[in-house]
Length: 53
Image 1 (cartoon, rainbow, N blue to C red):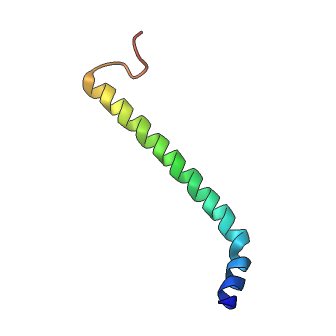
Image 2 (image 1 turned 45 degrees about the vertical axis):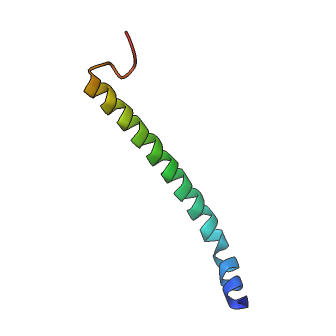
Image 3 (image 1 turned 90 degrees about the vertical axis):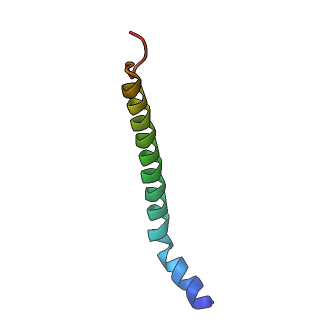
């Protein structure tokens, strides 16, 4: 178990930025998917995506 702990501590400087980057990419993808769904729904209904003009 000590070897596993030592290996984890050794990889921590790489794992923290990797985890942060993964969270950022996931959040960005989620926002883009929601925007795409909203635009498709407006297109299917025939309304403008920005609201009434």
